[in-house]
Image (cartoon, helix red, strand yellow):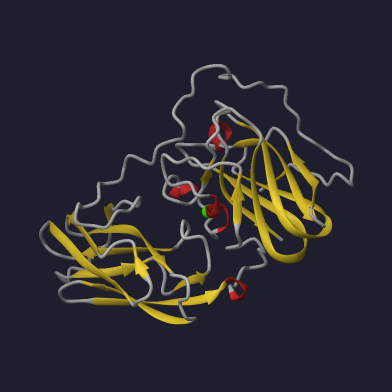
Length: 317
Ligand SMILES: [Ca+2]
């Protein structure tokens, strides 16, 4: 993690750049990197979902069975969050069959919770696993408590408890922005880039275009802003920003370059840190402790084509 920021109250050490947008004035290019090409199309029988099924080699146990698997042994689903950012869990199937074939599992969730797919199915060679993101929505008015999520094949069943709780009771690891309301200056509508994804607790860039990061809608027009309400006055002194950064879409070409970190105190926004010339995937900004109701990131420029703002996560402590 790189320290590129300095509190304005302290001696500011800013990395500056005189670079201008190389592509300014040209016609708008591709709005955002597409999702990786390694995904397979979903079955037409599945509910609409932006999340695709992936197949990869696994470890066959030679049992001849089809085994449901999940990426976690429980799922926490907070109440009252933006429906664009439901709780998510990896689900899948491992084939220990001797021959390739279609592997299918039913997905069931206790009402009133709803899941993004009712079935998981794919052609699967022996020893391979398939995986997919499952989105679990908590409708307004759902009672707190533990609900059941089940993956069922013809011979086996896996149950994952889903814990529904208010945001105030989440184990946030000190990140007071987690699952709080997010607003942004704009939102790209050609894919799944909701503003609430910058506070969904997932800082990995791997789910880009799958609902795990925000992409603004105004090509080559800055500033772009994203603000997180903290659910009350909180004393904070640190913001960690994660921008798009993968092997295919590295931060030095697709990430944000210049931004201000602002806090809202008494209804007024104050700049507490500035980052200039960033090329890293994540940047920590420390500043003098301040009691604030909200945090805002004001993006002034991006790397590469300098076209869009792409932010995966903003954590506040
Ligand atoms: Ca995220």
